[in-house]
Length: 353
Length: 111
Image (cartoon, rainbow over all chains, first blue to last red; front, side, top):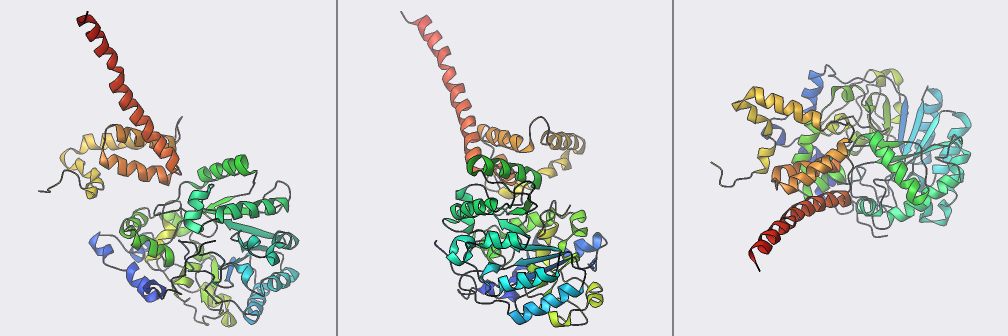
């Protein structure tokens, strides 16, 4: 599989989050007479943006990945070495068990590449009966013999598998995710189906994530879901539960793509003009907390990638987790947030309206 | 005064035609928006028809707008190119079918 290097490994100027924030706050807002996200939230009566509680505990267990997708907001790849330690995982476990958390959402990179990934899932399942999501990139299952039993492992621990598949054909998928990714993804989906995931009456959930292969907003989620279900069933006999449609946020490698292809200004303008107050009310950061590999807390995975740390008076590390203080915080916002409020809204669970 | 007839930035100013005629512009845009809503045809199918028509009438603004809209509604490159071929076939066919008129006239004139 042909891979590209991460921005981080290339020492690209966009690997510096300060530079990304400068780009996001560049003169296009004044030149195009566009309101800032702060101004928009104010007109919707949502400033300061406050949490509604913490229902989703999202853990990024490392930026290491077997793929280097063009649009990756994490800038993940085989050359990234950041992984969550067992010590930090233990701190996360303690927080999850001692609070009422509805869903634990494990992401990466490829989370399965963290050497303590299975240990963590096993320990978590011993004491936690809520939903555990693993964001599996599919190809990891076939990347090495040691991962081939992942479908059975997920089944044993009743994991909700959420996997990216940007389109139901090889051309668009491979252009975004790398050469040969579609064929391997199909093979992995068949293995997951065989284990019962995505099949009726098994209770084993397999959701797919769609995100546009280019500089445009996603189509209506239900319309895309119908297309994906028909095409994957007809051509590959693959079934899945739900399609989650996610807008690409203008950060990291997708920001690089937008700038390189001269799409940045048009895309940003489109996001701003598509601002939907209803979507703003339902943004995921209001009920989510995101933890990075080092245990730092953020309002969401996107803020994590921009190193916009949480504003909690009790502290910003998992060891300082204080629900009361977190529920009183102001959510940190910037211009990239327009990605979550455009059109039908977007979050890690798909559309938000 | 601009030195070219078409400027991509003008597409975003389409609504400005109301400046010289609010009432008719309102009627046009209301009707226009209703035309593209889901009905017996889906909005995606309507976008692909619009894309084909855009090529038939060779309107650069429309081609730009309906390429974007077709992609946003989940149309594939293959579907969009097939729509363009439909436009091409009708335009080509419209010329060729007049060949019958040419033949009629020629047959009348020639021994």
